[in-house]
Amino acid sequence: MPGYLTTHVLDTANGTPAQGMRIELYRLDPERRLLKETVTNHDGRTDSQILPEAEFQTGEYELVFHVGEWLDAQGHQAAKPRFLDQIPLRFGMSEQDHYHVPLLISPYGFSTYRGS
Image 1 (cartoon, rainbow, N blue to C red):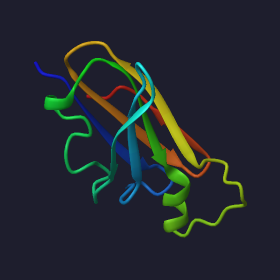
Image 2 (tube, one colour; image 1 turned 30 degrees about the horizontal axis):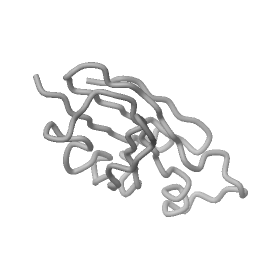
Image 3 (cartoon, helix red, strand yellow; image 1 turned 30 degrees about the vertical axis):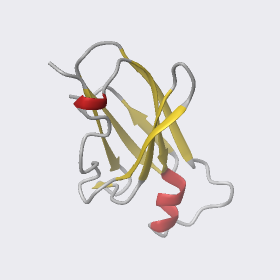
Image 4 (cartoon, rainbow, N blue to C red; image 1 turned 135 degrees about the horizontal axis):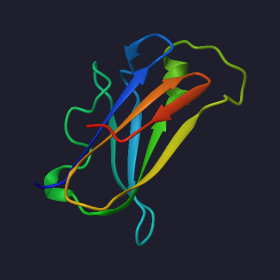
């Protein structure tokens, strides 16, 4: 099976998808290099695979979720600097497979896992 990468962002404070969040994807080896920048859709997902089969390579990657600017756009008032601003998630993909990296967020916490 060819490998690919997807993501999904949910606002757990409001129980809704995080529509309109900017996400960057970096490849970390041999050096940090921006591969893609995208924005989540109405379902909190990207419109296409964030790293499609044709571009997939095993290795180390980083997703950067721009949570602070998304919270600002939602009208969430917070002292500056925000508790959460950018959330970088570094992870490895060691085999040709579907990697799904969801992010669950609130203004003061987040969690992630390897989804399906």
